[in-house]
Length: 295
Image (cartoon, rainbow, N blue to C red; front, side, top):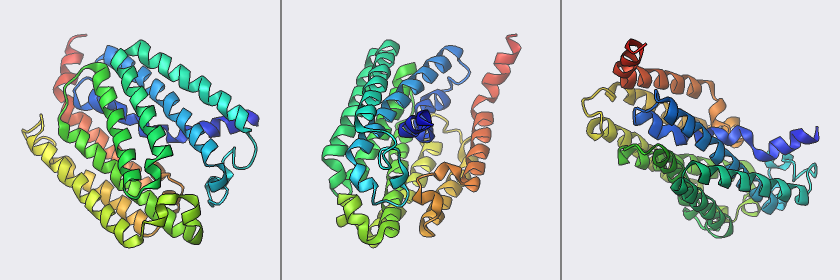
């Protein structure tokens, strides 16, 4: 039972966010390269260890505010199932393990992991208290994650993909702030300092703008990116559908949004799977045939 609480402290279910490290592998047409696939998976493991370490650090710092949250009050530290000293031991073990693995894989990948952790520390100590800067800081973290994956396999990729990832993180960040403001109501300001300055009108505006920018950036990528022959244009409706679905969930303040479990929405999952299948067919049809003919 105790081990289960330690696993919950790692927030393994949030590791899906780290799949962004494979963006270079997919769009750089390296997915069929066994060597790059293996090194990307190891990079993913390193990233998961490091991100879990600062999830633990956050929980240590936010014990009192988490007790006021209707969902976060069930976290291991908030309910006293794991002590602060035990949490710190786990924090240092997985953080050091993540950094060691990162620097073994590639020196500059390791540096980016240090920058990632450093930006997270700045967020926890400074940025998260300031309106809009808190969400932008999270966006920078996602940029670092995506660039680290590209650097790890040394493949070129369109800057539009990086910009699009930033806008996606902004959209999800504003969704989270909005649902916190609605769900927590009078206790919102005690839970998160920046919520003292946010209001629903400004968050709705920021959410819509970032959502539009996500779609617009992807459209530009399909037209001016490395696959400017138009092969990716047919995937635009799927990206638009995913974005619109998230806006709908946010508007009704769906329970999955409240619990930060976007990935559990069945419609979103279906759209993502369909997009992934079509994307693979479009990008790898020639490469796949060539691989088969080599056997």
